Length: 356
Image (cartoon, rainbow, N blue to C red):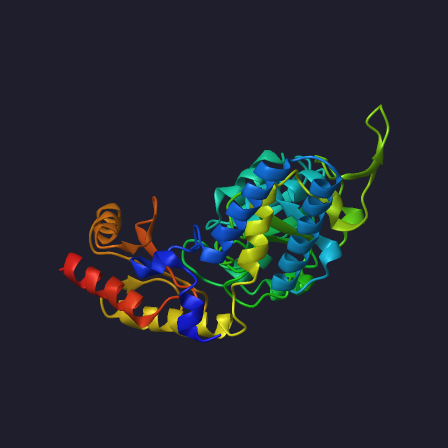
């Protein structure tokens, strides 16, 4: 598949310089078509009966295998959830933390992660978003390190393999800005989350959670698919592997759309995305203060000279879609493998005009 053929899968790119996959990636025509086809199938054939149930289960298995392949792990260790926030909550609630325990995190995390950490009842230790700072914060009370692989704010990539190796403490990785954007080998971590609606360009209300050792994490909030069998009292036998942590039912059209989305990404996606992000960094560095370290991610965050809210709105009127990071005086461009030079030039031209 050529770049032009791969890019042409996304109708939105015909009009917009769409640079916000860090929130939601563009939807391919095949993804939308698969969702519509599945919805029409359910309208025609109903949402019940053995054939419908078998299809839902088959789609779930296909999604599980697809997400596992993205992060380089065995599908038996992947749970299906509806979001990274939910995935984080599953992990933190299953650790049975108390006020005598500590979670080490950073000051650059999304609320989807830190909200669960705070609600756990453990003492939350917040450090600078730096590997050495994380390691220095660890004490005998530390039960979990919870942080992002790629920071959603600055786009910096943390060397969490070094943190895990040197600390010996379980690590929960928020992979929202890494899985599907850069090559990931999640097997070296204890827990790793996936947000398919972002860099995998899947439907919303989808998520994945890698659990290295499912038997050692308590199933604190069992969902519809958690039990292999159960009693009238509610006592149950969990499913084997990470499937016990599946958080609930996902609609057939959503599953079909995600299966289709996982098939839209070419083999060269990571190399192309990295090169295009480097080009974006180069162009913007001549115009604004770029805070993302070169070569770290497919996010390029910058500090505008004027009001970021007004800048994002003005760029939107020019059909250039970027994101403000509220309260941080930053604007973020999210560069995918589908991004071309024209998209970047449109962003640079808009910045040059609007920041003069």
